Length: 241
Ligand code: PGA
Image (cartoon, rainbow, N blue to C red):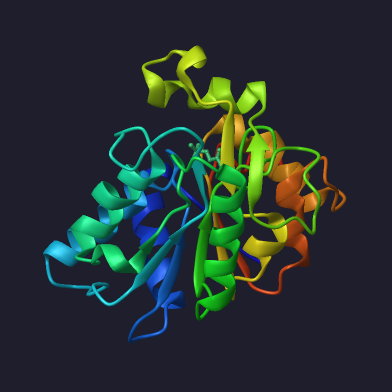
C-alpha cells in the first residue's frame, strides 16, 4: 500500500496526478466515487482537460453506487453527479458512462444487471474510493460481507446523516436504500485510489488500514488488495501516528 499525506491545498492536484498516472492510455476504465471528497479532484481533472493537458474522452466511467428511488435527472442522484462533474466536463459520451439504475421498478434486478455489466466489461483500471465516517466503502455499510457483490442495501443512520448535506440538510429526504457495488466487486479493480480528507474520517481510516480485516469496517477489505494508493490530508491521517 502506498500512502501520501498532503496538505489540504494540494490534495486535488496530487490526487489527480496519481489517478492519471495509474490510467493506461487509449480507452481506460475509471471507477468513480461520488462523495464530497473527490469533487475537487474531478474539478482538477476538468480544468486540466479544458487546458488541453489531458484527454479522457475515450474513457469509460463506472460508478460505485446509486440511491434507490432517484432517477438520473434528479440532481441529487449519482447519475447526475457523474454526468455533470465527470462525464460532461471530460467529454465522455453517455454510452460510456455506467451508473446503477436507481429508479428501476425492480432494484434487485437492476443491481444484478449492474454486476453483470461490470463482469462483462474490460475491468476497472483505477477505482477512486472514499471512506465513510463509519468505515463504509461505497455503500457497503458495517456488517457487509467481504465477498459481497452488487446488491440493494439499507443505508445506515450515520450515512444518511452524513449525506443529508446533499439533500438540503434534511435527513428525512435521504433515500433509505441504495444499489452498491459489493466489496468483492470493488476488489476486482486493478488498482484503488483511496481518498480521505477531514478529521471525521480519521478513526475510520485508522481502523481500515491498521485494524483487522473485518466486515465491521468494510474498507478494511482494501488491506487484501495488491495495489492500493491512499491519499489523505493531515486531519484524516491524524489517528495513524
Ligand atoms: P465523502 O464520503 O462524501 O466525504 O467523500 C465518502 C463516503 O462516504 O464514502
